[in-house]
Amino acid sequence: MADYLAVLDYSVLRACCPLDTFRNSVREMQLSFVGSPPALPELPGLLQAWRTDRELRLIFVHFNSETEAALRALQPQSMSQVDLGLEDAFISYLGERGEKSFIPLAVPEWSMAKTKEFWLPPRIAMSLVIALAGLWIARRGQFPATAQVAWFLCILLFGLPGILAFVALQEFPPREACPGCKQMRRVDREYCAHCNAPFEAPAKTGTEIFASL
Image (cartoon, rainbow, N blue to C red):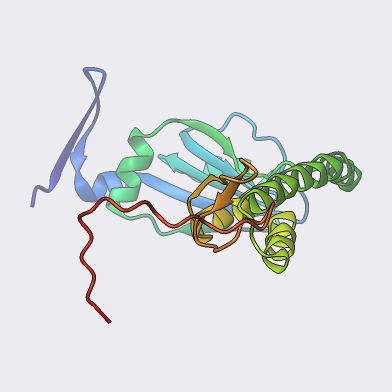
């Protein structure tokens, strides 16, 4: 394994030293605060900074007593050094520099309530429209009344996933026009649901083979 390191930054030599020297030159400090961390002043050697609602994580190169005094001037509740491996030190040295914030944006409760109130009526209306569409499909397919009611309630409760489940799971028998009333009826039933007419026997072609009884 190589024990010497050279770093080129856009063709400019930025580091050329033993690995231990490089690792010891990059240091991470963690500062905890009672409230929100204050704004950072100009800190010599600062590579990266991460800010949360109660902490600051700072990575420095050539950390010294002057930098430590500047950090203590921020009046942190606690300050400690974090062990930094060679790989982390290398990534921090070559990574994007500057401060990054990981504080989630606070959304006022009244705003969230207003948003829910705004979206609730359209969602109910959309579910009702989808449920009515599913009921129309079930009635058109001449399903039993219990199946129509069950699928209507399922689609009304689950919305779009409900009607997708209805189309995927429900069997739709083929239909054809009734000779009596000319309306579409299911071929798996003996009588038409509209006029109660029976199906006509299929015409013989002369190629039938039947065993004598």
